[in-house]
Image (cartoon, rainbow, N blue to C red):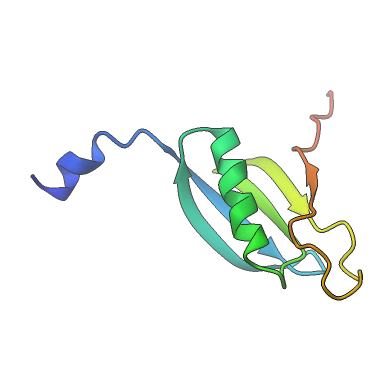
Length: 96
């Protein structure tokens, strides 16, 4: 059984999470697959929690921004729980 036959059953969508610094500049990115948007947000949150130096992450699927997570208080006391996140959905569309 070749690699192509094994991948035919993988119906997960491709996503990318961007890691942002305190100036909102991208300093890293990670491609991953997830079964749906909710699973992608959950996976991105895992990435975020494991990167304490990261100020925010944005989850994208191709040209669609799916979600943004950021730390609500980056200047907080030492030992601040890195799992405390502010969560923002995509920006609302502007009517023409």
